Length: 354
Image: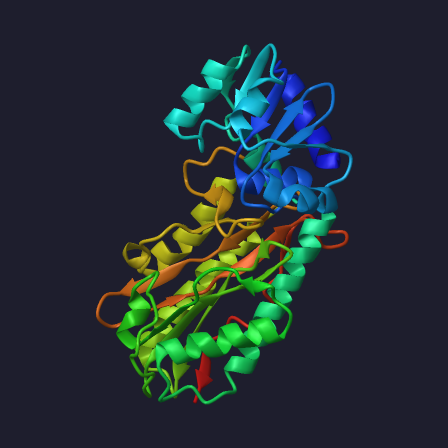
């Protein structure tokens, strides 16, 4: 119930009488319920109610504690009948029709929820950090195993399946997202989907992947080379390596989110490669693979202790190849430090593979 009490504190600050939670990932965060149909009514005072349908009656009872469970297939109607005064709704994910229905059914005045739960989710508790550590450990162990498997002559798809199978063998409940394996010229495509292209000597090989544990997602990217690297491959990898290190170093409790972006981009600019960095620098990770905060120059927030995010600069040369280095980083979780704890601990140097 600690997460619900954090939410109630915020609701009081905004002088709201409650929040109706309809985004499933936020339902899970607040209650532990993982079913595919549910809503939570969180009043500032009074009993929290989880509404779901009959399929999930037993599951809801097993996964939650201290919450009233109501079996009602009409989630919005069941929620609306419990709302009085001024309530927030998750209008950023509700459909227009669902929002209209909620307004029509409720006697409350309904205002936008302004991503209240997503903001709370930016700061992880210890159990969340532990799950992320485990997911990252499984991920890097699988990658280090993969490098030893003789990859030249295999297709991108085969390499992806090898890595995914190993993560599952090591204890992942699932992969965190669709694995990116990009060989040669495909490594210049930031989010390439694996194909039947064979890895050949001289190719860069970009691997972006992660394991999921207890609902929490790891995210890691490494770029290797099949055989000995060419000078241009060494150069762009070194530039990305320096940029990524500069960004990670700025992941400090109390530091501005925008400073992480500035540090990484300034490094690439000084090296003469900034125009070839065409994606965002990073994002939060947790119950979703992409969640708040998103690192950007316009972000006005500051990093808090136990914020977990990625730092992932890259250089992408169309038709030739590209490099990305990405780590999942926790802020202020190391003993006697307010700085970064890199959870994806596999080396970031340019690895030569066979």
